[in-house]
Image (cartoon, rainbow over all chains, first blue to last red; front, top):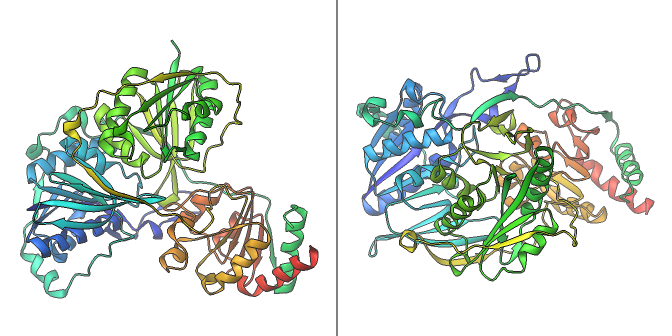
Amino acid sequence: MKIAVCIKQVPKTTEIRIDPVTNTLIRDGIPSIINPDDKSALEVALRIKEQTGAEIHVVCMGPGQAEIALREALAMGADEAYLVTDRAFAGSDTLATSTIIADALKYVGFDYIIAGRQAIDGDTAQVGPQIAEHLGIPQITYCADFNYDKQNNVFKVKRQLEDRYQILSVAGPALFTVLSSSITPRYMNVADIIAQDDKELHILTYADLQCNTEHIGLKGSPTKVKSTFTKQYNSDKQLVDTTPEEAARIIAELLKAKHII
Amino acid sequence: MKKRILVFCEQRDGEIANVSLELLGIATQLASTSNQEVCAMIGGYNISNLPKTLVEYGADIVYIADDKNLEHYLTEQYAQAISHIIKTCAPNIVLFPATSIGRDLAPRLSARLHTGLTADCTKLEVDEEGSLFMTRPAFGGNLFATIICPNHKPQMSTVRPGVMQKNQPDSNRKGEVIDVKVPFDGTKFAVKLVEEKIEKSTEPPIEGAKILVSVGRGMEKNIDQVREFADRIGGVVGCSRAVVDGGILPQCKQVGQTGKTVRPQLYLALGISGAVQHLAGMSDSEFIVAINKDKEATIFGIAQLGVVGDASAILPHLIKQIEMMK
């Protein structure tokens, strides 16, 4: 069995701050990480590998520095790593990105594809289902638990919705997206970190994938960013610093004034 | 013919999801500024009673696909039904709820129809020609972007629950109901439903609560007291992500970018510092009261009343005060 895992390198958005003077994002010095949901996707694949001996091929689209994310995936136990990178891919929206990654996955080959539900920089959760549609394979998103039935060669997965869960079964090929809240990824050990140094990354460019130029990059993206802005919070503000008794009295007065009590 | 805005209305077990009605609300607003029609589509099994409600809440035309194949939500079945309806209706705009169903379905369809999709919009505007301006948070709520889809149709977006306002239902409103027979291709139904189990939460939902008492990590130990306080003022308990990660409250209680979007009349933030991810989910609350030990906490930047102090020390006094005032 061959499992392709899609990962993205993202800035650690929890550490991003807004520059109060220029009102822009401060991205300098913000560490890059494997997107948390994607890391859990890799963990799922590695657990299946332990159970079945599956081969794990990790695919990441991004600039050259995304090699670090792929090296980390190798150190966690992935077998092969592919960096999908080309200037022609720059400016792609989710649909264009999914076109490129789908072409890369065709190149790499797979029985199953596992990806994270969504990336913390964009939070769209769109690229996974779009890849599945391009490849003409079924998708199961928001997966919280996986069971592989070796005898029947099917996956039984738990799909978590807001008010319920579904147990769904599917035979490959299929694409799954994973929730990081339910699957905790392993740590790399030192031996694996050293061992992955000898592994070569596969670089896939436009020349390798022969994507439809009409459907990739800025030009091939149906959606365009018209403007970006940071939110300005301003209101009539009152800040009090007093004893707990007095603070409680001020809040209680407010609740009374608002007819809550 | 007028241009059309089509709303995918989600129902679960024959009950229309609140967010579907919110989407009809924003669709009505957009339609009136750009002279468009509001269409709704709804799929399921034995749901013939539902179109009436959708008309009452603003739909001019309802496309209903009542079919055994649509009894439970499954991606391919619903994707086939909706792409068939989109072909019939030829909308200019399609709106989906940003739920675990809408966020599964909409991207699948955007690839099938080869058109753009903007996720988790918190604001939608339209110009006179019907071009859609879709605003959404990115980078964990640090940045907002307005997205357009100029050369592809339909323009599609998912919209977060709790963000848009419903119309007042009007039982005299008239609309057309179109019964759709979907030409299903069953050979593509590769995913089988083994089991579906509803997980009824014993906790009251934070969506739609008028008063929300939201707690941060510092208040975990006092959660019983927080509940007591919330009960006394008719409020519901919510929390920041840290409290969910700490296992104190379930995920359905989480306010913020990766949780729920809320806009209660009163939001009481107890021991919440105000990470942008949290603010992204509650900054539109009508009135915000924040208690935090750190007088530099970002939550004070948006709170109308900020109290520097230890919420766990203030809370017992507050409960006593309320008792006295009643």
